Amino acid sequence: MGSMAARAKAPTVDEVRGALHRLFIGVRGTALRKEDEVKAVELAAMLKELSRFRRDALLVDAAAGKAPVGLLAAELLGFARIAVIERDAGRVEACREAAARLTRRAEIEVRHADVGDLGAWPEAPDVVAALHACGFAADAVIDAAARARARFILLVPCCYGKGVAFAGGASKWATLMGAPRQGAVRRRLLDALVDAERTLRLESYGYEVTVAPLVSPTVTPHNLLWRARRAVEPRAMERARASLEQLREALGA
Image (cartoon, rainbow, N blue to C red; front, side):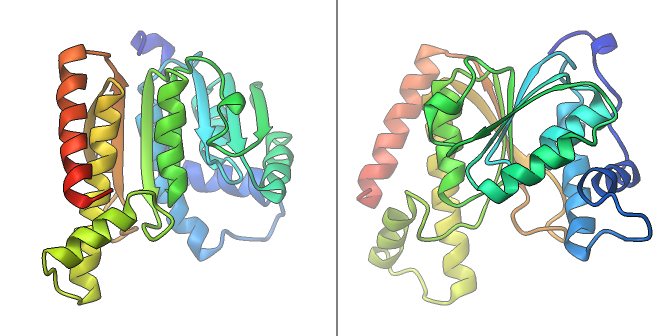
C-alpha cells in the first residue's frame, strides 16, 4: 500500500461532517440531516480504511451515489486520482457540483454508467470502494472489480432482497430445509447464505478476503465490510471454486 509518508491521517467524524456540509450543502446557517449525521460515522470509518493507501492510488468509488466516499477521500485524505461510477443522472450531476467545491486539487472523472458496465471501469485500479452498494449492485461491483483486476476492494453491501442474484436459491433452500417463517430469523439465514456466496465468489476470483464490522450495528444493520486483496493463488482459487459450486448446487442456484 506504500510508505507511511505517502499516506494521510484518518479524519475525525467532526471533520467528515464539516466536509459533507461544505461539499454537498454549502449554505450557511443550515445543518446536516439526521441521515447525513449517521452517514458521517460510516464515511469516517471507510475513510479510515482508505487512509492506509497511498494518496497517489487510483480510487474507484463504485455505485457511488453522489460520491461522498470518493470526494471526501480527495478533500480529507488528499487522493489525487478518483473515478466515480454512478448510473443515476441526478446523482451524477450532484457529484459534479460537489466536486467543483473541493479545496484540494484532484483528478475526478465522473462516469455516468451502470457499475456492471465493464467499459466504465479503469484498468487495474488500486482500490475500489463501494459503501452501501444496494442489492444487485454489490454483486455487480464484485464481478466488475475482479474483471478490472482491482488490487483491493472495500465493499459494504446493503438492501438484501429479491434483487440479489443469489437470493432465489437461498430462499428455496431455506424452504426445503424447513426454516421457520418468522421474518427476523429467516432474514438472517438468507442474508448469511448470500454473504457466503459473495465471499466464495471473491475468493474464486483470486482475492484474499476478510469480513469485519465497519461500524457498530447500532449505526446501521448493514455494517459488514468485505476487505479483499488480489492475490491470485491458484490452489486457493480452486478450493474456493469447488466450495462455491458445492454451495450453489446445494441451493439449486
